[in-house]
Every structure is written in C-alpha cells, then in structure tokens.
Amino acid sequence: MRSGTRQKAKNMSYDLLVIASDACSTTNFSHMDFQGLADKWGMSLDEWNRMIDARPPRWAVNGTEMIFPAMDMYYRNGRQLNISEAERTAYYDSRGTQELKYLNGISLADFTTRHGFTVEVINTLAADFHNLEEYLAQGPRAVAISTTFIPNRRRVEEIAAWIKERDPSVHIIVGGPLVRYSHMVHEQKPELKDIPLIDNLYFFQKNEPHPNPSIDALVVDARGEQTLIKVLEHIKKGQDYKQLPNIAYYGSDHRLTVNPLEPEQMGVEEWEIDWENLPERYLGPVVAVRGSLGCPLRCKFCSFVVLYPEWELKSVDFMERELKKIASRSFIKSICFVDDNLFLRRDQVDRYSRMMAEAKLPYSWAGFIRVDSITEENVDWVAESKCAGMMLGIESGDHTVLKNMRKVQRPERVLKNIALVNKRGITTHSSFIVGFPGETEETIGNTIQLLNDFEDSGPGFNWFNAWLNAILPLTPVDKEGDKWGVDGYLCDWKHDTMNVAEAGEQIKRIYREVTQGAYVGYLFDDMGRFAYAGGHEDNLEAMQLRQALAVMDEDGLESFNGVTRAVALDRLEELVIHQPDRIVVEDEEPAESEINPMLSGTSEA
Image (cartoon, rainbow, N blue to C red; front, side, top):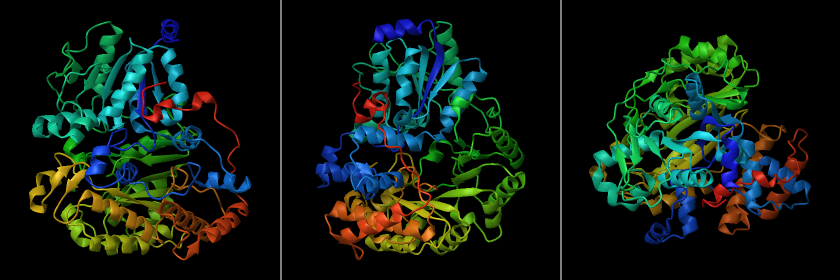
C-alpha cells in the first residue's frame, strides 16, 4: 500500500501538511517510561502516571469517562455502557477537539499560503487521524510538526517515524517552542544531559547517534515561520536546505548538527492573519486568537519568559480590526484568546472588554485573565462583551507560597472577583500548582479552603485543576533553588518542605476535600458548556454526585461526603433522565478508520 500510495500522490502532490497538536490530553510527560521513578518514590506505575498527568478522580464505566452525554447513554440503556477505549477516544475526544482550531495550525496555514504554498492542516491527531492517511496519500512534499502542543521529544520522534514509514520521501520538519527551548537548555546547562528525564524530553542533550532518524530538519528559533518558508522554497526547487541558518539536522554520523542562529524578528502587529479569506477547512466554530506575545512578569515556576522575554501587546485598534474580520465568518461561534497577557492589568481589561462590547461582536469568547485585574468597574463590560469563560492562574491559596512564586495576588481578592464573575454567568477554570518550594500540608489546607469558598450560586460555574509542580531548567526556581534546597528536575524533585511523592498525595487530598465552590471538569464536555439545561442547582448537584462516585470508585468506598453509592446513582439518574433539554449522544460506533492506533503509544499502524 505504501509505495502505491506514494505513486498515486505524485500526480496530486501539495507543498505542506501541518500537524498542530497530538491529543487534547497531551502533557509534557506523555509517552515516557516512568517505572524506575515510580519505584524510586515507592509508587505503582499507575499512581505515578496519574500524579504527573494531574488526573483527578473521574467517574468512568468500562473505561469511558462519564461526561454528560455518556451519562445520558448510560442511564437510558439501563445503566449499561459498553464502549471500547479506542471507540471512546475516537468518538468522545473528537467531539471535544474538533471544535477548537489551534492557533499554531491556523497561523502556519495562513503564513505559508500567503507565500504561495499549498497547505493542509491536522488540527489534532486525536480527532483528525482519519484524515491523516488521506492527506499523506495526496503526497505532501513536507510535513511540519509543531511542538506547541507536543512538548515531548520522544512523542515527536514517534509521530515522525510513523509518517516516514508510510512515505519515506516526505521531508519532516519539526519546529516550535520545544526545539528552541531544548537548544537553550543544551547550551546553558550542558551538565543536565546525563539526567534521563532531561535527555528523553528535550532534543540535543546527549546527542548520541540516532539509529534511524525520521526528522529531516529542526527549526531552532522561538518563532520560525520565516525559516520554514526558506526550507519550503528549497524543497520545491529541489535544493539542499540543510545549510540554512536556524536549522539543525542529522548528519552522516546520525548526530544533530546545529547551523548558526539568526533570530527572527517579527512583531505581533507585523503580520495579521487573513481571517476573511482563509479557507473554511482551516477554521471551525471555535478558533484561537492571540493578543500578545511574551510576558512582563517573572513568576518563578514559568519557562515562558525564557523563550519570550520581551512583552508585545496588540493595540486596541489592531485587535478590534482583527476581531471584526473574524466576525465576517458567520460559522465562527466563539474565540479563545490563547495568550496569558491580553487581560493582564485592570486598564487592559477595561479597554479591550469595552471595545468588544461596543463592537457588538456576534461570538462569545474565553481567555486567560489575571484574576486581580477584575474590578466592580470593569466586570460589567467583560460580561457585556460576551465573555463565556475565564482561565485563571491562581496557583495557590497560601500567601507564603504565592510570595515564593513571585505571584502578586491576595487570596481574599481572588474570592471577591470569583463572586463578581460568577454572578454574571461567566465560567471560570482555575489552575493550581502543588509542591512549589515552601509548600506544606498547612499551605495545601489554605488552597483547599480557598476553593471551597469560591462563590458558586451561579449562574456561572467554577472548574479547577491541581497540577504537579515541575522544576523546569532555566526558570527562576531553577536558578534560585539552593535557597529552598531544591534537588532534581521536572517531575523528579525534592526540596526543604516537600518532595514529589508528597505533592502527589496532596493532589489526591485536594480532589477529595474540595467538595463545593469549584469542580472537576471532564474533557471538553464541561468546559463552559453543559449537556443539561435543568437549572444551575441541578447541574451543581449532578457534578457533586459524579465526583463522589469518582472518589468512591478510586478509593474503593461505598460512601463519600455523606452520600452512599446507591443514593448517588439513583439521584443522578433522576437529574439526567428528567432534564428536558438534554443532548442525546447518537448511539453509533465510529467507523474503523476513525479509530486512532497512534494513541496506543506505539508507531505501529
């Protein structure tokens, strides 16, 4: 099939296939063997993987997480649900990931088509895998794998090998933040190369000969679009591109060689996506938008400023023009601002939300907002601008830990502002870091108290996730770690007040002791949209019962938080069956071609 596929493709080839992301649940540490570390910290492999993925307890039946449509199917089939893991992945994950079109795919498609190249995009392998074989059969000259959402060398190499097996002649180009960051770690901290975690996660470290390299070129630049254009021009002309600046490639010795670097210079307003004329297949009902690049803050856990130390913000006028162009595409129902800092300060929230409200844009939006930038004066503008969801990096409910993080915010202010947006129907999704230096059982107790005190009377909802602290190379906590006794990197660390295994136990504690105020979301089903319209209180009760069942299953309990399993199942059935406006999941199995063998963690078809 492979040679025949390529022969057919020669008559219908195009220039570039972009792979924007892997799967909606991809983390830095996916697809890595952690048995040794699990043994080191006295944990089972399943416990270890659950900890580093920050997986909260989720109610599942026969391997299917009980998102709202799954609960509907479960109860209407007499409390039975038999869906295989592959079917679940193909069906449920695709329903979530199909909607949001990632900005890296959109921007690469726009930039390359403007330079005269023909392009197709895989938004996410989890949802679009059934298109991948078809796109490869059409014979792309090159495949560009973006590492924005695949921040793991082993996984990138696995995807590249899978593609190369099917088309040995295609040029595979890898770029994005992982490549540039990997090179910075290699250059600035060469002593880390002997740490297996570092070598497995990042490119360039030991740089031992690769037995069978599938990647033809890596773009070593924090941006990289202009370098990609030069590579594509050389490929189209049949010329060698491996001597271009900003390129790394495997030489005859199968080791990576890095060419001289010439950093690309392109401000956030120097290139505007052609939203009005992009082919609809690159877009969808939800698209990602960027309002800034870089960050003026220096939170001590963050590696973002290592890559993008300068902060650039799009002007209100520029942003308004872009948003109105997006509004011309009537099929776009919502946008997501993917940068952290468009709504960083109170004056920015005032100016940008007022602009969007006065422009009367037809779609809703969600985005990252610094929680203390919300005020009683600007929150009504935020609501009027059709804000449906806020992503909040709260990180901790403890003053000391926040100070250690250089996170300038007060928990009391967090509670006040959560109440402001909750009363206006805006959903929040808060993230917390567990185990930063200074963390103790007492500080975790303060975080739990903060979450339980979140205002949830509605009509908004509050979601949260607790993430395991990671010691990332070149970050301030890495550079200043001695004062806290930090020893180790990534997910293998200890410091004066906690170690990674203890942090894992505290994550479990958070998910069991937070019983009101904020709730655990499931996939994309609960991220700001709900399957039932039976009222705010009914939805809250359904989520509380679902979480109780999740904890009971994971801990082998018959009751949790004063509710027995039988009572929880019966009451949840009442809430699910008697909701008048339910979303019914079609009772059908995905086609065999939609089941994604790449998610198995192997490169076998």
